[in-house]
Length: 232
Image 1: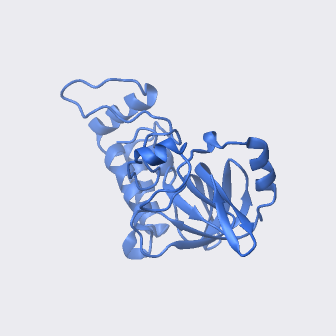
Image 2: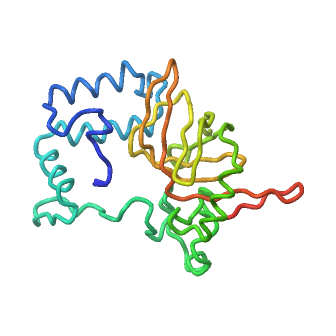
Image 3: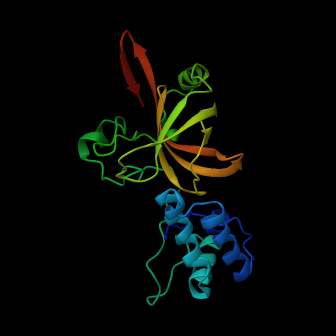
C-alpha cells in the first residue's frame, strides 16, 4: 500500500465517512461517471478506485491505513503487513517515477539527467532542476494551450489525448475525455515538455474532465534548427 495515496480523496469522501457513503460514492464513480473499463473508462484509474475501495470498505484494512495516514512513521507489528513506503512523492528513489525501472550507475553518475530507457520518462525530479531562473524563462515561453498526450500505465499501446489550459513549473491543467483518479501517476508528452505527474484533481466539465496535475519529474524541449533537444 502506498500511503502517500489519499484513498478518501480518490473516492471523494471525508475521512469519517461511514461505509454506506463509501459504497455509494464508489458505485457513482465506477458506473454513473463511467470509470469502469466495461463502460469505456481508463483501466489504471479504475484500478486505483478499486484499490481505495478495497481498503476503506474493510474495517481492519481501513484502521491500519488510518494509522499510517496519521503517523507515516508508524511501525506495524510482526503480524501486520510490511511497512508502507514513506518516501515523499517526487523525491529520488533510484528508479523511474512512472514505470519503476531501476536506474543504472551510468545514469546515476550523469546527475539524474536523461530519460528512462524503458518508458522514456524524464528522470530528474522537479526539485533537482539545475537553473531555476532559466527554467522560469523557459516555462514563460511554453504555450498555455497545446495538445497533450499521456499514459496512465506501463505498458500502454495508445496514449490518451487532451489539451492544456495552463502550465507552470509546478504543474499543468488540461482537458480530456478520460477520468483520472486523484493521486494517479501519469506520463505527459507535449511538443514543449515531457513530465511524470501526479493527479491532484479531476472535475467533470460538460462531457469531459478538467484535470490538474503536479509535476514530479520534468524536462523542456528546446528547438535548434529542425531538431529538438530535450533538457532535464
